[in-house]
Length: 460
Image (tube, rainbow, N blue to C red; front, side, top):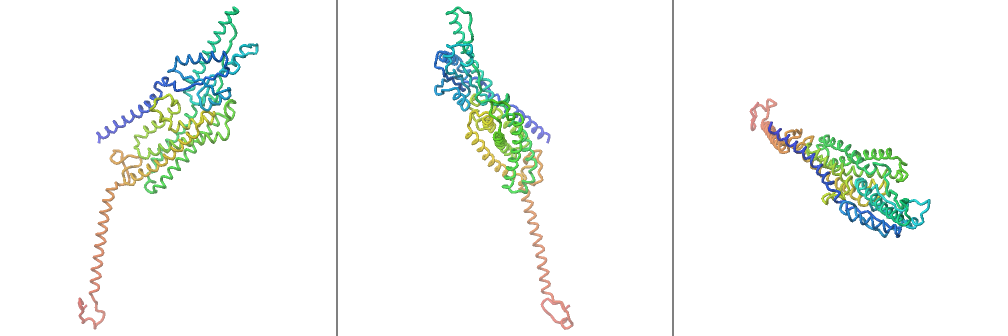
């Protein structure tokens, strides 16, 4: 018994190591050397000026981009965008950001007056609603650095030319840039808000799922499989619906309808969209976890929960484009698709509604089927005496089930059946002998019959 306990504690120790290192490997593997994959992100360069200012700035940005091709986003010149508003719309729907040399920049510079605004020459179009890590760490700094470097170099050339022509030691700033957001999320932590919303809601759901595993043992003994499957499915749906409603209310209270006039207003429709998105994400994750919880032993509950939650968290934070090809499966995780829907609802950026909604609905349907199979397996193990209330299986030192093993129960039932059959036959034989004796005996009930002899008549 002591050796068994020592082996079990060693097993728990190994599982604890796995529970620590497996999520850490997932996280650090996803962010490992991510700067080497920044070139997979593309920034757009749009010249609406078509003049000296536009040509000089474009040439400077492209030359700097070639020198740092592997450690910075790549630049591409767009000639199919003709206005600033059209560029802003395209970036909101498809891009990471753009530097736009505004139309008429060369003409305004040549006609410099007291009302000339250097910031009207260049516009940096950012997209803060697509991904928090890529936007804050790579694309926005690259946009600002490229615009600043190009405008400073152009201004230095203009000042040098003025010095050579008129001897003026310095001059006013010729061109500069301003920044606009194509898809503002309305408040500072909004890009990571989907992560916190899904994470907190999932942690609230995990406790309920584990309690359902521990308290449904008696139902598996009495309820039919299809009814048990429907009950578990309804429980998960109702619980996640309640949690997601509180999550949507929290977003409403924190953000408010008019938090930032540059962002999309938080209307009733967006409230229900946030509610439905959170519900779909929690439902997919909850069905997945409960399907495993019903079959695994208690020692693996933490390992499964940590791996599931952390992998979903990493898919929400880290842009999948900047990870190794192994991590492309992040595209199928509920947190990732829910976060993309979340950001579109709040900012209108990067709409891929058909793909994201289709993935979530497909996962919900698949996990519902898996839950049915898991409930069937759990019920079979419980009724055969192979699994107990917490989920330990027969042979484990902690196993204790009120249901006898199926084989022992069958042997006991056969033995009791033979014993009942023997007692029944014994009672039937006794009654038959008594009936035969009664039929062959005739008791004299009168004086005349007392001397008559019949078969078996004793003349009593």
